[in-house]
Image (cartoon, rainbow, N blue to C red; front, side, top):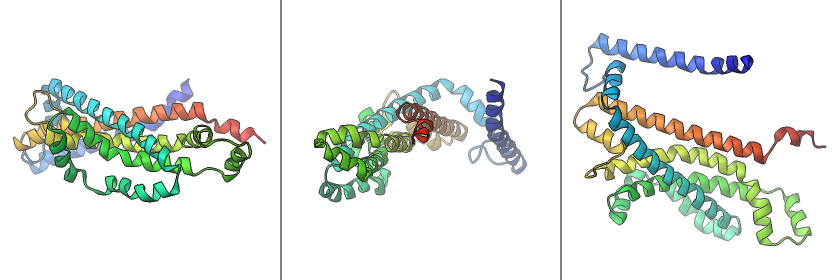
Length: 266
């Protein structure tokens, strides 16, 4: 127990000390150069703004978290389904995969207004933007996992007259689990980015709005400390979602595959 606690302290102490050093240098630079608060507030001003507007920031963070979570869940579900289809035919992959790449190459700020035009202002458009930007990593990783099959295992299934469905469920899908976990971790952060970008366009005119609109609003009003507080909240939200997905993925992989047991096999 003590060894585990000491190991944890050794892991978290360096980044915490580095963060404190950055905050001290930031505050000292603001004081030394007498930077106007609307250009760059110090950490103390940002902390004061976060405390003063804590309720609004927490509410906006919750709205953004729900939108990002819905978009992320949809991207994992639909991404795996698309990968299942791609794994069945080289012709399908060759025909459709370039359009999947399109989702990654087109800037989300370019298609977000189009999504809003189609689906209107509201929560659903934010979810769709988060879904679109987080879909590609799941598709590409899941497809790789379902296609990268050991030929010997594939021959073994064919030898026992396994059907296409049996190969898919008992071989391709299990083999793709580590790849899906990797893609999900990437998509979790992108979903937060997509939700905030969507809120830049959608958040106006509603009684409840997320972090994206809050950041834009505070920027336009030159309330820079409040804007910094919202930006920090969005960064913490991304870290929390990524850590949650990583922990869930590690739990799934620990139950799915035991490297130590595999290493003991002859």
